[in-house]
Image 1 (cartoon, rainbow, N blue to C red):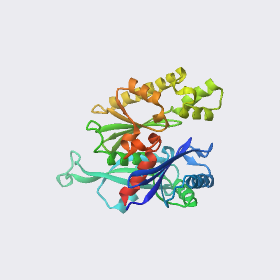
Image 2: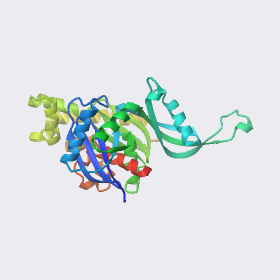
Image 3: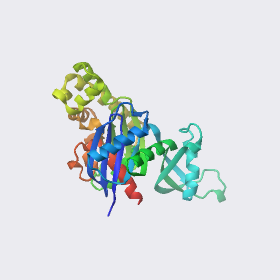
Image 4: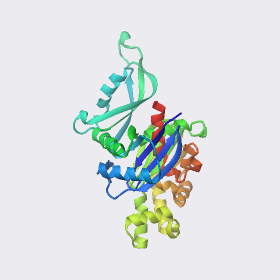
Length: 345
């Protein structure tokens, strides 16, 4: 029987937890993050993070000794890599050299891992001698890396909360697992798709062809822009305004000023989609799945449906039993990261 694993997704405004077993969410919990506990993707106080996690588990009666964590985008880097066929030890030795543009300081301060996506063949270069002209077998990899101290901090606060960290991977890996698991349920047209993560401080567009990640686009806009609008309207600080937005206080989500902010977001997304399609002339991108806090704001979703030339879907379609998960849009990464660990077993 599959073991229970707690997926942990730490955001700037909320920490999202998903207790999962065999790819299904048994329980989901979201709690506010203390101000400044996460900065530039790093937990600023592992002790405070451990206390928050421990108290949340106790208050919500969540019991498991295994944890999987989503690495924030700011501290993790991901790259599609094609390498000659080689052993696992050789791969781990050679991977760091694929990330020279991402690494600052010493290689020894980083950790790397990979997932094998498939195999292929590399044709010989023109002009090679006949003996050198044979095609070589290659490995297609999704490679990832982060600093060692990021993993050490995560191990520390999960251990102090009574769990062992069994998986740490970027958001892209969590999404890939969700797509793989639901491939049969996705429409035949969804060979190429986008998962749109509408977060607090930014919006990220993750492009996939089937279950292969092909590109990520980041927009420097997020729900905080709408919070600023509401803060001016109600004369409150931006943190309270964020609560107003998520709870639709006094039907504020439908205010004219907010509708204008939604349209601005849609215009930025339209530009990003057009640029992606222009850069990928063979693109058949026609489907987008929404997640993140913005996925729960119905007038924002409707604005995207009206203004974007793409079919918009809810996050619940990517999760087994997703229609029964409240605020499913907020828990996609936390659920998906537990499936990554389950698949590796």
